[in-house]
Each structure stands twice: as C-alpha cells, then as structure tokens.
Image (cartoon, rainbow, N blue to C red):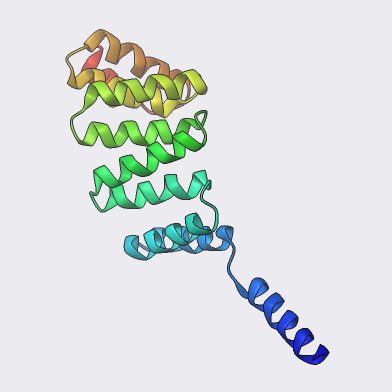
Length: 166
C-alpha cells in the first residue's frame, strides 16, 4: 500500500512540475505574435490567463493580437479587463485608446489617453495619439499642443506638428 501511495505522490508531483507556467505560455505567445501567428498567440495568452486570471500583461497582449486580427471589440474587452485588474496600468489605456481610434471613437480614445497621461506624465505615445484624435475631431490647437509635448518627450511627432500646427 505504501508503494502505491509513493507512486501516486511521485506521479502527482511530476504532473505539477510538467505543467507549463503562465509565464511560459506568455513567452510562447509573444514568440508566435512576432512570427505573425496571431491565432496561436491568442491560444497561448488564453492558457496563461487560465492559469493566472489576474495576469494583466497576458490580457493586454492578447488584446494586441486580437487588434491585429481586426477583432476590435475583443481587443477592447481584453484591455478593459487588464485595466480592471490594474487601474494604474497606463499601456492598457493607451492600447484601448488606439483601438477606439480605429473605430473612429475619437472622444473615447481621448478619454483613455487622458487617463494614461495622468498615470504616466512622460508617456510620449499617449500625447501623440491624443493629438491625432484631437486632429480628427478638428481641434488643431489641442492637436498641436499634444504633438509638441510628444516631441519634447522624445516621440517623432513631426508629421502631426506639420499638419496641426501650421
């Protein structure tokens, strides 16, 4: 009986150590993403999330993969979940803003960029993207101001500056 118990415990511990971790699935997903295998990346991001339902980066990156496949509503769901888990995660607001912009929801995009900038005042890309959204809404003064701030923070905003500031 003891031998069976030891065998069972050995097999159980082997099964646990043989399972991939959430981080390993994330790494695999990132590799698939960069190899342009979005479907495979989404599968691995989902596996990471099943292991750790609070894995903010897995939700965000799965959102990026969905956005690449033009599943904008699915991407927004994932970015929103990342934000629910960590309300101070500026990149999720920035990515959700980009997706809203692709859906022509420029006011919604601006709202996300405002929060991203409040969290990280040096988030150059958020200033640039907020400027683009303002440009599309006809706010050239606001677009110019954001483009100049993005440029000051190191983002190449020359195209937006040329269009909005002249």
